[in-house]
Image (cartoon, rainbow, N blue to C red; front, side, top):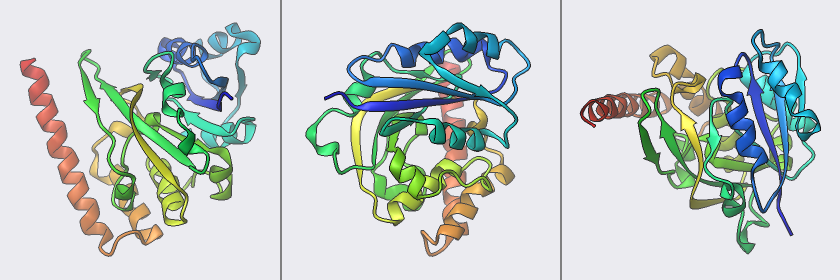
Length: 249
């Protein structure tokens, strides 16, 4: 029996990349797919593109409170067991990625299944990004949300994304799932191409304080601010190293 997946895209003025993202969803083989787009009143040609797909997708366009508010609306609209979230400038890795991710008989009791992504930079360079073990969620996000599928029932039971977090509501949701005993499965499947200049790719200190707030509010570690600083400066260093590598490639 094919797994059923609701794929959600939050859109706002993303006409230049949206068709690629939607096409990568609709081309998935070996799974039953629905594509849901939640638009925040785009002013470019985003709505024309959504309309061009007819009944192959479902969409709404209305004012929202940001990306995670839009995603919460998408979860409410979803009809299928699994939820997959794709950025409007991202792309599923290949036509069998979601089928491969959910293959095997050991996912029945799992709430979250995840794999890897390939990071795509504005200069055209790509870098393989390997997810970490899910127990790392106590301290940091073990992978990109573009590599994760999550059961809709789990998301609803956790009251969806918490809108008080601007950038880390996905980390908060998945951390709460872990702390409340939901089960995970890690795979080595490449699930998506992730474009690195999206909303959550910034290394601004004050914006990244969202991470500290999640650690503190969920009581996931003993010293949340120290944990945050270690993660932040490691990310900063890694970003600089990647920048240097790209110069010489």
